[in-house]
Amino acid sequence: MLRMYTLCLAGIVGLGLGSTGCGSGGRGSGDFDAAWDFGSGAGCADVGVTEVDLDWLNLRTNLSDGATFPCTAYGGTSPPLLDDDYTVALRAYTSASSTTPLSTADYGGVAYSIFAGTTTLLPQVTFAVHH
Image 1 (cartoon, rainbow, N blue to C red):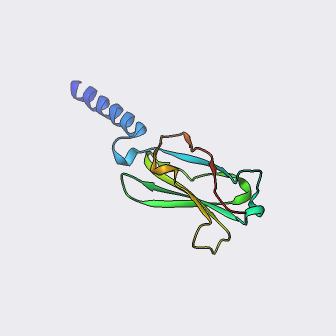
Image 2 (image 1 turned 180 degrees about the vertical axis):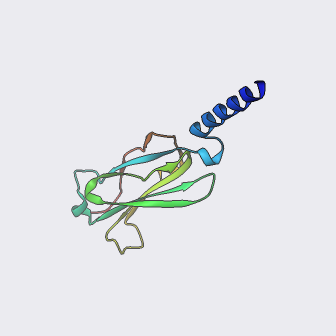
Image 3 (image 1 turned 90 degrees about the horizontal axis):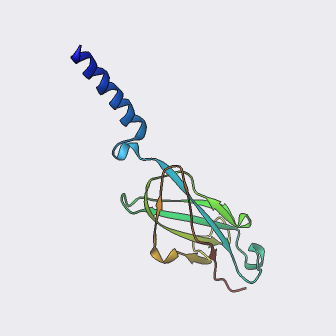
């Protein structure tokens, strides 16, 4: 009887750990939310920007990725990311084929954290562009 009780208890504990996550295999996900403008009431067309990239670097894994948004959205949300610490940057481009951004905001290299099931709001960026 004691053996059966121990096996059942071990199974229940195992199910509990499996549902809450344990170690790197159980990491949850959240996302970043970014917003931008150009100051002085200027719009995307006024400064010639068509798209904005949100790029991130996972500080634990050193893996980077990004997402692209139409400039006129004036904001965007990343796809789900693993719980971790990241550095992020926003880059404004004049076209989809541009390889050099017109303006970049790297948030001063500050690390931002992603937590399971939450959205991490990044400070709004005002791009510095000459128009």
